Length: 199
Image (cartoon, rainbow, N blue to C red; front, side):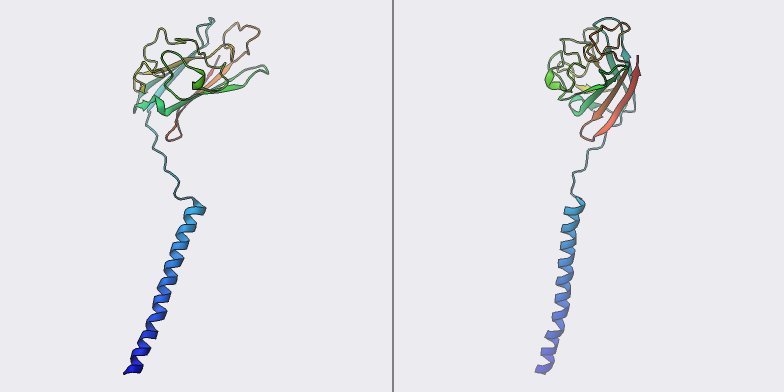
């Protein structure tokens, strides 16, 4: 009877060791997959469904023109603090291309500051009220609701010293003929508007 009891204890030992080995292998495989395959990377927020937008660019002939307008026609609202605007200008001469990014929106009060521009700060007009004096739904400065929703227009002005799209550009300004505007929803890193304008 004693001999039988000893044999039973020995029979349990390989089963326990097999379970322990399998558990260790599973733990190691999980740890390696997390570190090597980076499966714990944060999942981006889904992009808002901005179903329809329209864009306009008026090169003009005056210093107070070169106005960009992007109107949200239909779809979900977007907080202005969640967007960045990429502005790229190109032209026939060697002074261009150039680009800038409007960041840290909304801007203060009624103008875009240097802290809101990443890149060529001459490309974006920073004068007070630039492009906003006759337009209510500007949505990128603090005095507005700072929510880009259907019916609202984002508006800003291209600086002539950075890229001159006018019919008769001054000789010291870089002549430009193509402007690309891209609006990025930063939490999802998705493009919600993109258009290229030619002058």
